Amino acid sequence: MDDCLFCKIIRREIPSAKVYEDDDVYAFRDIHPMAPVHVLVVPKTHVSGMSAVDALSDAALAACLRACRTIAEQEGIAQSGYRVVSNCGSDACQSVPHLHFHVLGGKHMTESMA
Ligand code: DGP
Figure (cartoon, rainbow, N blue to C red):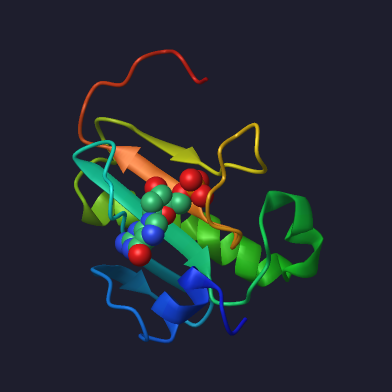
């Protein structure tokens, strides 16, 4: 999408700190990290979020989740543990309407999920 922030990052029109890329996925460091490791995993195909996930191919969706695991290993947090979060809609404070998964780790997190 022309005016989507994450589409612009994927097209390299906006700079980002790339962590991982394959045919379906681009991943980069969050500009406002909430943990020592905070990576955003986004499908290259634009879909607005989890509620629109039916518009994404099964292969691309699986690639996103596999990328989260690969990144956790790359970042050295696979053994200690990490969180994968996708905010959807206003109650969840989704701020960028392009499906993305936050990969968070590198510290002991609280049990609170909300
Ligand atoms: P969410 O609130 O779940 O929609 O997460 C969007 C995230 O995107 C938020 O944690 C901050 C991050 N973000 C916003 N703009 C930029 C940007 O220009 N570059 C990078 N790297 N991250 C961004």
